[in-house]
Length: 91
Image (cartoon, rainbow, N blue to C red; front, side, top):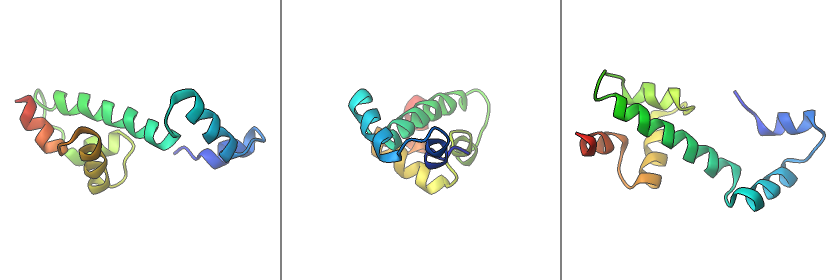
């Protein structure tokens, strides 16, 4: 598990400062960036699901989401379709 606040304590920097610098550099806040990376990975795993079965819950967990419903909400907000709907589009 990664905790931004705990990591910032180790380097003696504030979370607010890091978030601001990250946003200036990347163009989005760290949580949005992390979700973008996670959803990108999820899309690859969903595509692999065509070859071998892996549940949506396992995909969510493997991408760092603890809650399958939250994963589905984030996926749909970024991709405009649920993970199951994305799989159907691939078929």
